[in-house]
Amino acid sequence: QSSHAAEAGNDERVSPAGEFAHDLARALANRPRSISPKYFYDAEGSRLFDRICELPEYYPTRTELGILARHAPDIAAHMGPQAEIVEFGAGSLRKVRLLLDAMDRPARYLPIDISGEHLAHSAALLQRDYPGLEVRPVAADYTQRLLLPAQPPDAGRRVGFFPGSTIGNFAPEEALHFLTSAAQVLRGGALLIGADLVKDPAVLHAAYNDSQGVTAAFNLNLLARANRELGTRFDLAQFAHGAFYNAPHRRIEMHLVSRKRQRVALGGEWYEFEEGDSLHTENSHKFTIDSLRALASRAGFRPGPVWTDPDHLFSVHWLHA
Ligand code: AVJ
Image (cartoon, rainbow, N blue to C red; front, side, top):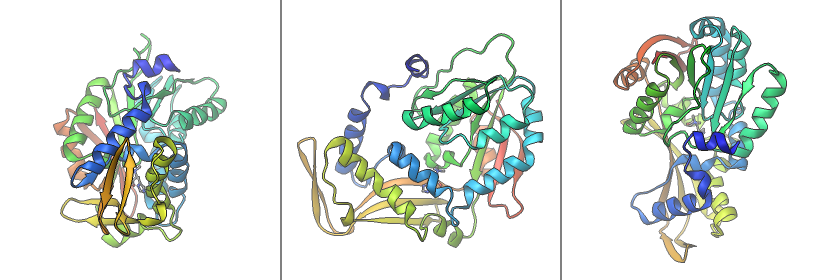
């Protein structure tokens, strides 16, 4: 798979621990302290995220699956024959099965994910169920430069698939940047993208503060991962999971909040926390149908049909590249 990673222009494969150590050190030195949510997804974090998707309070996954299941024939018709699917941040590969099952002779599937181990496992399971499909997993950070292998001459449309409202993790200017480069690599094809919708803040709050504490464990896994990979000695019991809806920014924010005054060593430096100091670990932006379409237009897409659920919790958009 290393040649695929090279094609995807992934810089992280050179030294993943070096990158994490560097970004964490910078995060701890900065004010406010803030780190990319991409570091949640080691093998343990990916497993915890899969558990989040099963939680009763976490509506996005099952709602999006419902939308995809109901509208798969319509979506497949937009894809056309022998289409190729490029999935950004492919995770457990459950959603793409709904598309593959409805498609006319799907030609090739390129799942891109930062968690190489988790991806290889999921890709092998998918390949077993779709023996005729060319599955080419790409272990890469899709937020870096996107370079995809050339399509065979007889190929159908190249369709990007970006489900789960992962677009919400980006800051607005980063989302614009990502969509602009996606529009370039998908030119002539399309992007099928899931976006979580603005709704009652109480529903949002519950989705990120589940009663079983799985989201808290997912958040704290960032520190556990640092302990495993970087030799830090974060005391997980001394950090609280914080998640709240920031209405002006239309986003859920997740933080790790220090329960007391403490310090941690990393790379020969000490970093201090006062009681109540936070490390900002994630933003999860929410959209209206119009705000997503406006963003896509600015990135060079032509917005097409939108599918949603009866309660308007979640949206799936077809964007012509
Ligand atoms: C994978 C980014 C879409 O923002 O809802 C779930 C990640 N974080 N619970 C989201 C997440 C906490 C998820 N995304």
